Image (cartoon, rainbow, N blue to C red):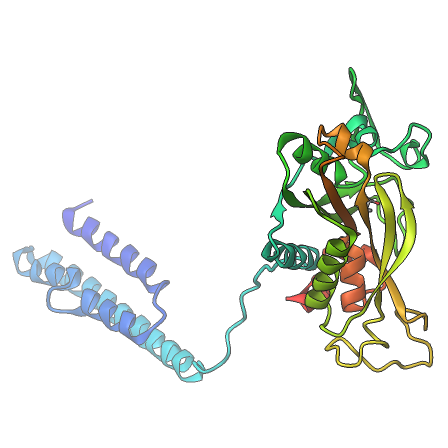
Length: 353
Ligand code: PHE
């Protein structure tokens, strides 16, 4: 193959290739200059004709003119197509939005509760999800025969530790607090958010895994009214400033005295609440006309718990409280099925961004 043949072939191939990636009139003009301009490879081939023999002159003259014609035609066709495209393109047309991730509603609720309590001076401490019987039960004054220690109420692992009993998936975040109480010295005010596990049958209000936020404060002169003050501030900041608090006597092994805490129903009993919505039926769909909603458990830390953590119960007192994040989120947003939190359905999650 002669030098001329090679150059011709490369030129033709390159043109075909470059034509495929032209989408605008500007690119098209660049291509025209490159292939038909005075300094183009084609012009250079033409300039070699005078050096050829008479017979070759005739052949190459014809061949180069055919190529020139082909390039011109293709460029003209391309030009029409590009112009059409540019004229019909509406640059003001809205583009597809980018899908953005966002904070999960449970994280948002948990963060919001933690930040209210942090502003009161509580420090966040996260513990591990695998604990032992001593930290999860014994240190919390929960006796061996207590039903929560049953295999139907706790996920046990097949690993044991001397003096600490079996390992398990923590059934509340209290063991993380036991660790802090043992490691630090009072005064202290700590909250522990995190996942907890209980082998409950999954239904609209139960899940084998859920989230808690528990807190405690220990100092020389802590009393029940401090506890009530903290809780009232928390619910009024979190739900609405006109929410009322009600404490009912209760029993927990780790606190004495203990109480369950209700808030006035945020749907039917809270006149100025932003959350107040119109009820369709006569019965309040959230409190079933009771007017109160149970939201957490609390009490004064039992002396046995303080002693288990080597804190002198004669000198120090403390309060503690614990709540389920799912329940609080369900009340706040009127969600009626706990499973919605875990299904990752964007149509549900999107409503809280
Ligand atoms: N630890 C309790 C639970 O998980 C909650 C709680 C904490 C209740 C502190 C009272 C005081 O059920």
